[in-house]
Length: 247
Image 1: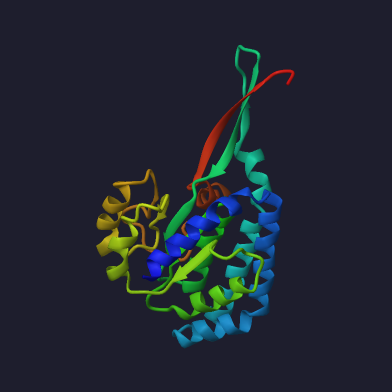
Image 2: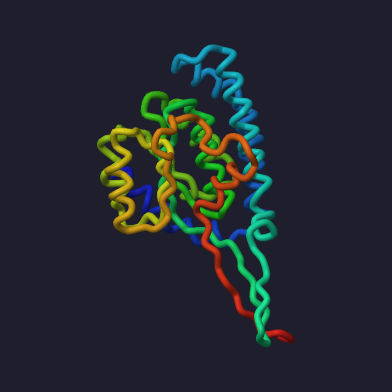
């Protein structure tokens, strides 16, 4: 029931969110980061309640806020970085533009439950997509606080849908849902990964996954800038536009 409702409202929210200008989406994500900073103490308490030390909790909250700020800076730069013009021997001007895929279902990592969640969510939103996120099963409190934070932000209703549930029960239904356009399976448990990949591949082309042999960790795209950008580009479609010269 929760999944059906999450997909329904996400589908309604997808087109209006994609239609927001890139600059506006970036401003909204910056505001989310500010609100997260205002609730930093609550996030720290959530992590401590799940067994993190005070120092580890403080470091993770700081990193999660920084990561949201990082993603907030990208929406209005994607066309410049990814788009381009294509020379053609005709009377047309041809260019490519990145466009969002739509409704993306994401499995957040169990490791570092707040940073992992923000690392997955930020890239999806920066690209103009909407998200259905299955939060950490073992440490759901940071996800609940993040959902409360988003509810008082300027993120429109339905753009982010965070679900806390048993993964083994929900995943088979999630990966075969016909109204989901792409899957981010980075945080999928190893024992469920093959089944999830097969189910998702039956009806979508966009599936981002953790490479076999790579451990589940908080940040799929840690390290070089090019690796981090993959968190956004994984769910962008490149649209080719032909425009008559002189028009």
